[in-house]
Image (cartoon, rainbow, N blue to C red; front, side, top):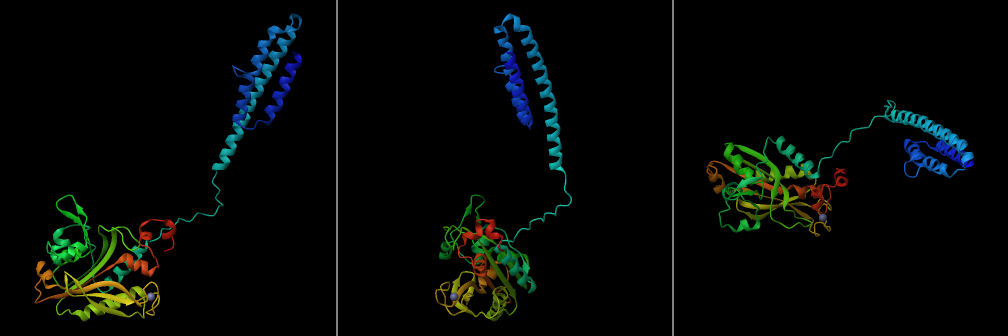
Length: 341
Ligand SMILES: [Zn+2]
């Protein structure tokens, strides 16, 4: 029994020496003094098996061991706690010699870059900038723009209706034209860019939410030459010098005459490539002279005033400018994409 008491003491000493954390010291306390399987209580329980003549010596030795171990554990607990506090303090101390961390700057979305650039171009030509509302009435989105209630062109702009007061999500930015012409008497010129909505499937080129830009001008004696000169200037500023531009007759309810505008393919400069289907041209916008009925709808006399209007897809311009093949890339909010711009 005395041997065993001595051995338990030695084992404890070496275990305590290698314990370096509060957790390890605590584990040791449980191992030696735990109420269920502690080694010291187990030794006390075995005292009754010890022969009578050895009992006193064994009891004394065991009491001494218990007191020594308890004191050793108490001291070690204190020391470990002190060391851990020192380490924690060291971790939390501010190292003023470390180089500072630069705040990370965000990146503008490619559509935002294109929109701001276009707004700047038209602001320089003293256009007002007014994006117009995205939730609109039928009058401003369709009827005032000469889409009569059963006009077949309405079918080409499959519309999201809001279930309140016969409102809808605008299908184009042209609603801003009507609102601007109502608000300001001519001469007036306004550039509008923003989100528009159509019930389209999501494909490489189409999305139910996309971005349009639109400009119009109403003044005395405005003719198609003014329109063409404005668009040539615009295309040169957005895509650079040396691109040709051509107008093809087209149809929109709110302009007469109407035209589609092509510019030379920015990738092959007109030579023909895969992107332009070997034609050398890219469709870029639609335009025309504002229909006399549209002017009458907002109380402007078409015999006195005339004007032009044009509209284009901002997403498409961003895709061409930054060579992005898929429109979904613009709306997926992938930071790795955005960080390139
Ligand atoms: Zn091409």
